[in-house]
Length: 454
Image (cartoon, rainbow, N blue to C red; front, top):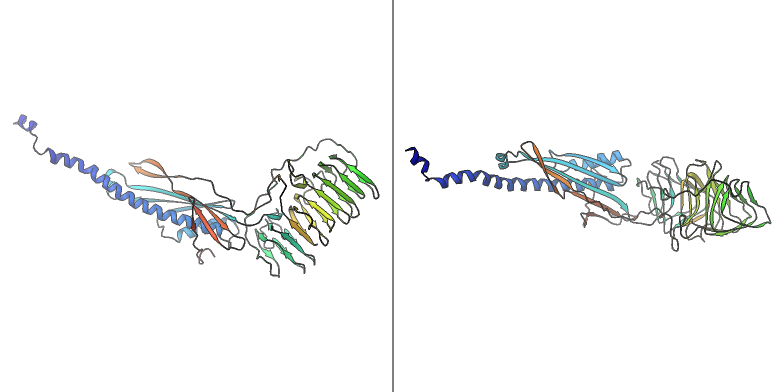
């Protein structure tokens, strides 16, 4: 009997079916649970997209902490119960990361109780518009850029930008006209007048465009004492290291090259000065300059090379907090950038000052205008050492991939899935249009929720 029972094969199909039923159910349950997890991930991705976009473009916040809080609030305003969210800010980029776990149904018979999900969205705000020809680098002071008096200011095809977070970062007073292609303040604007175009508030702080510009050699002395060109004197000057400073009261022709000035540069109002391919590097305890352009002053920066497009370069560590004075007139032609990162620049221009200069961007710690000035940023013919600060949108080239984890019996297995997105916001100077690029495909951006983002 036992031998017959051992050799019997009736009912094998039923046994095989019973044994195979378990993996079949597991596979069917896996498809169902994976579909549920995919739907949840899509909802999370949409929520992080909206949160990153809304936080990056919001003009009602001024600090990174406020922008992070706004991103989290926008995310939670969606149906994302059970998900955890975190946000971070790096420069003009806002990144939102969300994690969630989806409980399984039929997959639980395979000892898979949940599916872990993680999604990420990064939005970067940039403005399509003209380059800045006046930039104040100071991040805290009141009136980092100030316009006062009865004289006029005109920025041709370029904008004015203040990095200060002060409520009066950009101050405009007096009876003169102030005109530019755009005004942007990292803080606020103090004025009782109507400015056109309307200044933008809470702009991002932009980096010093010349921060990587190297200093020339400053050791040794080509001219150990103060070099002066006296009234009624005509003299040709050569590049070198002027350890006692340089004062020009008469007529001087400057040969092309770098003039390292220790002790200050002074050009008197009746001086006649000309030079092409010239860069002044101001260093030492008395680093700074005073240019009173009552006479004919025509100075042009090099068109290429290390200091291409740079006319004045102040040592960032020398005589910090000092004030430079530029009193230009109709016969003053300065072509090239004026860069005084650690010093204030006081511009008291006379009628017609700057109109002859195709390129005269000003980058300083602070800039004070109390006279007529025309600023331009036409780099045609110049291979600039650094680009003028610009608000043109740039693509986000980052490609992020997050892992979706599946926990099996306490162990974690991961596969790479494209669950993050890089988004870039394009804004016209007057908010004519806004678009986002998500995973390389353009799509309209919905208007921000007024109850959260406004």
